[in-house]
Image (cartoon, rainbow, N blue to C red; front, top):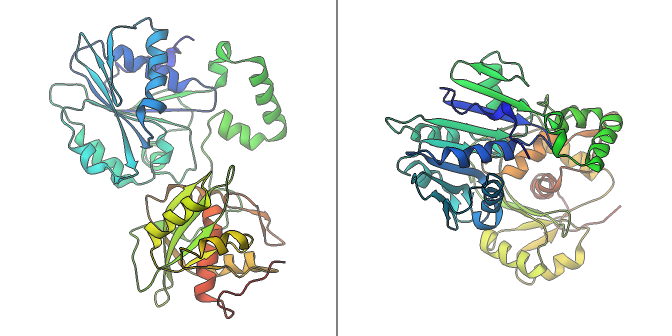
Length: 399
């Protein structure tokens, strides 16, 4: 697999590099291979982050080992569980997550010494510009070229990266070039045809013919306007506040759909609902859900999806949980309640933010929402409806 010439830009004097592209564009391969080559030079300390990064040794480091082997550089590096060091130059890559199971790691990241290049992979997942600024300002090694490289699949135009590096600079999406302190690189599968299988290209052709909007966004890497027919436009990021008692909402999945737990806190005086997603995971067993609920919610009330009465009965042995009220029109009624409030979303509630950006009307005239991007939102609806509009207090029925 050859490195696309479009990626050979790291010798530009820019501070910022925005690397965008769709699926199959080869952007991760190209940039990561160049980072391996960069480490042959002395004086580089590269901080490689993802917003959420599982153990680097099983997620990202194997990808770099592949690049090292491709470049024929085996034996030149020392590889540990979270670092790759070039034996001759001493330059290294540090792999870190911005958010881990133990919480936000921004404080420890900004205190790392000597960082010359920060790589933010899957940059679309970082939605809090304050976190970006904090780490950005820590990349200031005197006497070195300092870079911030963002690698991403473009998301909606509401993302701060679009607002900051495209809209405010008057830069068109999809360009390749430099403006001010920023270099832009954009590639698509058309730049990587030699490395793609016939079956993959046939799949792309099918998407292009049947779903042109998906083709433009996911395959060509175009930025999305705010989702057409998006249901909630009354939300913003902000600090989660506990005004009185919190009530948790819970939706259930297993192998494909996630199980979610969302904390809601309703400020009726100011018509504000504060929202914090605590977990959003697939494959959880009943025992694991019990343990997570106990650790996070304690004795606080949880309102769970009443479509799973057996599961709720089992959870009730350990958790303070009741089934949600459901019935004809309950979804649209719950949506209307949420639309009547300002929703303040905890910035680390990544999956909830994605849902709010993509939860749309299927049939606007009939007020029918699409049945996707709703696992955390359904949990919110259960909890908030219970608090604001539930005369039966825990009784439920299913239409």
